[in-house]
Length: 122
Image: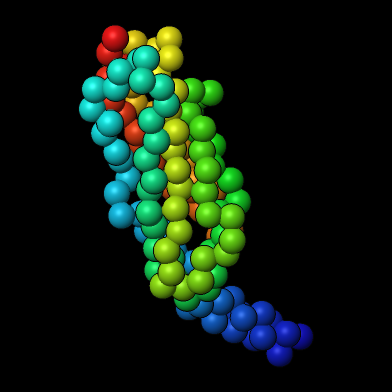
């Protein structure tokens, strides 16, 4: 019984030292500035690096509203390698200031927030 307890404690101790994937965005927010409503959709590509020691996969990207459409790196990102998340904003029928978030869920079950903002003008 003591050996089993020791092995379990040792497992949890060692697993706490193993570094997991770690997503690090170059920037967490992009400002489009003034966006003309009639010019159509605008997009920005957020670049990130996996600074961890294990491969990283983006499981989902959830925008805060239907006016923002995401796309992202679908393959695993190896340690030290780069990936992306694209945020596309549709200004049609949305005059005024905006700030939208995208929630990025990764394979290590962590959530990162990135933001786009600007002002829709006629």
